[in-house]
Image (cartoon, rainbow over all chains, first blue to last red; front, side):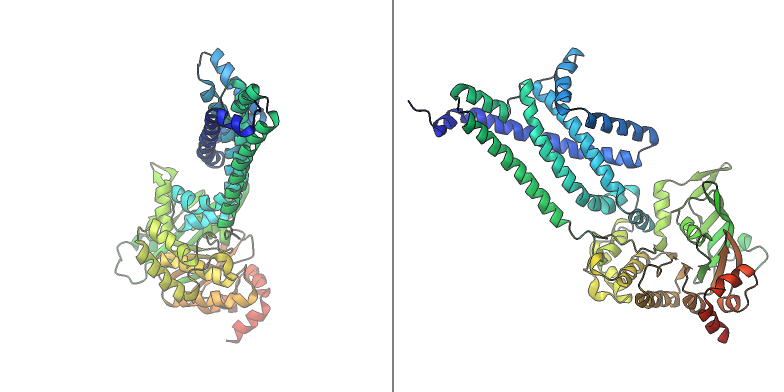
Length: 220
Length: 278
């Protein structure tokens, strides 16, 4: 009997769907953790007391300087050797989130640093506290500068999830490879995976472009 | 003035003009360079005091010390009886907490050379921010107060514009409205017309003149000598971090006692001619 693409797709649908869900889930968790930790990290890099600042700087520079794959392998095998037993899924999330946080911290730091000092002074002059200055004056202005590099990082993280297939996380890539191992339809199913990643990342870039336009009125 | 004004200030509360700002022996250094070498200044309620001097004389730095945008190492500044920025606890000088500083700053308005409006907010939102977040005013009430002050500075029809849609003069008038709306004890003006095109200067000075007439206490760093002559009640000349000469503007401009002030005023010859003519 002749194999058809649609017929094979139907056979593999649950496995592929599981892969889609895992990839999207991990991407979302990693990006959200990265954004929150990045905001805190960025603040510490700008306003933290000197020891904290140095520690954060060390963290950011070290994590940015290590290939993600090495981080993932260390997180999975290395931590196991040290007696910390976590699943491949958790190890992957930890490694990617740590990497993402480092990048986002630097993005937030740059954005906060680039806001003219007069903004903080004007906010101080009307009696706003540190917290209020950050929330109402600095963050909205930083947001516009954060969007392009943050989207960039987010897209890289989505692509980075494929590396988790190496430690056995059943993401889109691994599910695709398993499907291909059964039906040998290499081109069709890699193309399917490519389409999935493209649509996901294209959506992210469009969202970024929308927010950039949305904050377009912030000019000096 | 009595021989000991500081000591009698509290007991004579019935006196109409009370001391709003009292600076005593204020010293400030940037690294090795001492930029303020002991400033003493008293501003009474309703006064418009102009600080003049060459750039680098310390006038802007002194202004910024008053609301603690600059730290100062020695001396004291008291605004409406409240020592600004530091407390003396058992002889050691301590910086006040962020919360206390914010509360003090809320009572001191400031207008900057570069406007510093919040670019992500409309004119009205710029004025409302402090009213809502610092004074805890309801939004509707803050909005009507913002509209009131924007109308006072001639910008009733610009309330919902963003800063980038406004000219420099209009932006600066919004900044003045933002400061005044907070109902401060005094307002600091830091070379507020220096960044403006010449034809826009007068609209900002007009608003300031209006404010002065309404009895607002103002401390003004300015190079606009005609404005200083006509609006200031008191002029203070700084040179190299010290007050060299001060007094009533017409008198000071007509008969400068120090060589430094004579040389400084010499740079405004056309204006001086005008002043001495009257």
